[in-house]
Image (tube, rainbow, N blue to C red; front, top):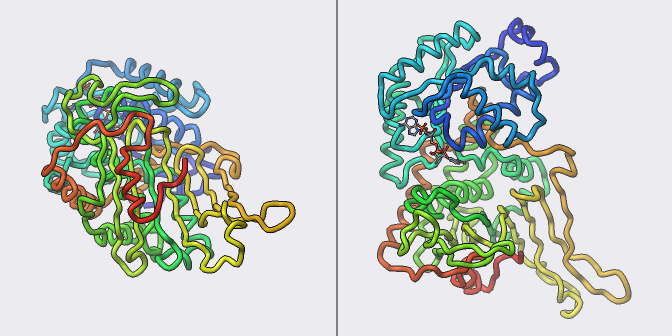
Length: 506
Ligand SMILES: NC(=O)c1ccc[n+]([C@@H]2O[C@H](COP(=O)([O-])OP(=O)(O)OC[C@H]3O[C@@H](n4cnc5c(N)ncnc54)[C@H](OP(=O)(O)O)[C@@H]3O)[C@@H](O)[C@H]2O)c1
């Protein structure tokens, strides 16, 4: 529903903004308000939205957690978080505008009655801030808290306005638990009210992938098996597990990164052009890709775990030495796979993907490697330094796109070398990149679920992961099998070498 003209005029700060990016009045309820995500990501994102006048004028925030805190203490803590983690200069007037609409509600764990207090606070915000019965509930809590909260808010839906639910990852830990979770949320919410976050999809560079493919006439005709030799997708982290051993021990790289971020990047790279950019059109195409991926055999999946080593010049402990980790842990901190998208466009074109912790550096890239020129009319020696064309999409850091092409080395004779045509996001647009959470929270408030994962996508993703993990149960890997600071175990290199290929040079 669009804002009425008189509502728009009430807020002079909205002047000049494109209508399409505004949200209707609403209240945002954050379950998990004392947690890390709220502090490091959500409040800095909300502040940046306020800074750009993208929040509705009639807006309120209710923080909910078990910790004891007053409204003012909550405001002070979040102010410090915005000052520490925000990307924009801190302006008192902007903060105070946001802080006025902030409330805090303390709950006991798994206590349904506490949700009455949340509902009362929301009614008060409707009166005092004009939030019109519109609600976004953000579940930034561990999965064991979901049931009480989802049931509690589901039973107390406001008679007026809309209700939306944002669910953080991980969405389940396998197919069965994801289906159970879907059943739970569907008991109270329609699918179009459920926003499953994969924050990678909120990254500008991930969306730029769609712009690159579908706004440029030159790529789509060659975006297929005839011209592309293979695709490499890397999601590399240099950090370890930090203080998240309890979660990571159960998840591993396959559930933490492969199941969601990596498979979403494959889907965006491989999908057919959607007929439009409505949420269903885009997600219909992504889910077709996920459905057409068959389970890789055990030879085509590599798992690893890091041992002691050096990252960026510093000695770091092995995974089994991290606090809270079982000294005999078999949890994977690295996974690589050769995947196939079995359809007309991609048949027999491998997608080599890898994700891991404590790798040499932080990097997320999609590399489209094209086939060699069919008949280069140069002497072999002249083209010795020439590699096949690669279109490299840098998702993080150094956001941008780079095309590797062959060029003549200046001077006598005809020597060919590979050079790079680069587009750097920051340089071209002279702006810093918005955080993914800014985009995603605002999209949800506007009712746009394009960049959220639909039920059938999650199901397909877990089906693939469950099949891989089932094969892992049959053998005992010899861990650790790569030192911190390497690019995974040697078997990851073998995966490509068997096919006469190598991972992109770093
Ligand atoms: N941190 C990140 O960057 C990140 C990134 C991606 C996804 N996530 C996901 O986001 C969720 C939250 O992560 P986090 O890092 O913020 O975790 P966290 O720091 O452990 O915070 C969890 C929050 O949940 C609250 N909580 C726990 N049990 C509760 C219950 N029964 N009822 C109500 N509140 C409860 C905790 O508050 P009290 O102890 O005060 O109750 C705390 O505010 C997790 O599902 C995580 O997987 C986090």
